[in-house]
Length: 270
Length: 266
View 1 (cartoon, rainbow over the protein chains, first blue to last red):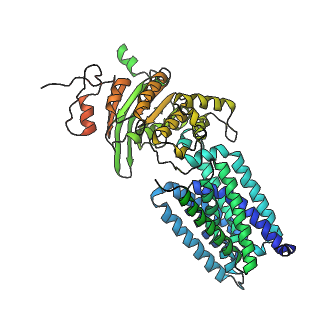
View 2: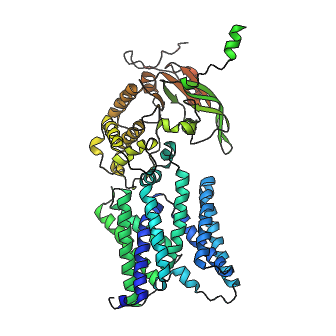
View 3: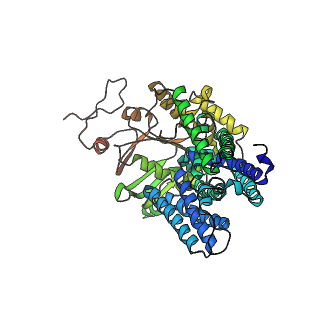
């Protein structure tokens, strides 16, 4: 492993893994407690439409994905409020349409040669230095947002109705959260790919929730767990020459089932 | 003539009333839940709302809080739009379905009550914490303040929600089935707290417990799509008929604790 760190791409991979872990722990906590896992999955997959559009119109795929996923997250947010009963259906449809759009526009792009697999499953080993700076900035934005509106976010996540009554702008916070999720999703796609985003957003907070007594502590623990999974997965993928994104998720999955097992042994159901 | 004129001039009572409903109708999709609700509630009242399940009790409270908007009609809370007034009211929700797993302590839940006064993006102040200590002590939950809310019993949790509503320093306090899961001992305690509070605060309680209704409340309303409201804590036969939609006799047990009026003997 140490000689691997002599390689620049390996150092970048490590930095990207840590930065993504931090954001996954913090935002993932809000995703889990607000039960917006499905919307987050929808945003991640629909983002592929943006990648296709970006390729076709000759702007960078990352920029395409960013703009597209922010736009679609707002539409999904509106759907989840206006049509509560069928929100999951509407989100599911946009999820699929986004992906279809991406596939068609990538095909239409002349001389298309971008590796589709790298978007689906991530390519942490080819994260360029410039992406790292974008990740640092996004981490700062997310941390500032959460720090500044901490008590409002806690209240909204715990009891939205009460928060609305006492005058917290729950709608605005909700859409801001969706916006940050879509920005982050584009970044997480770099590391684990859009198919695997959900695992990294949900598994660490799910485990952390059981061992913490406040949302802030849950965010910290989830971030740490995420770092452990990412680094362990990266190491395993290097050792055994496996796909990095999938290996990271496998490690997280093992952690998930271990925590379930420990939970079942430690606290038998009444 | 003079008389008639003074009758038509607007008497400017807006602020005197805790709430005013004028021809309020509300439907979910196609189901009509409330029809033509009209009433005015004076400040300082202690109103009990009874009615069958699905009769629109909770809908009524949500309209008062601005969580729902009426299809037709006008609602004024303390002379303002419900949304504008919502920071001046306290609310104890019925729902106990908030996540048990959510990592939050009793103290943090109670502090939420201070959000109506706290500034966005600022931490809670010492004053907020002091206020929350008082209300948690009042409901007997101060010693549990560090506990995870999910580990409490239903009754203890309800006490915390009551403390949270009190922490808002409300001018009107709404309680939706506050005694639903509370232990009987605290139930009496709760109504004593409310009675004391009622010296300064208008209180509106939705309840199934008709017995409690009459002994503590100043006035009673019954809602079952329509709304019947009488000032005075008298449960009339028409309320009971509407609430249960079959002839029900008002029976009082024992004279010392008579809470219901004696019924007509035919």
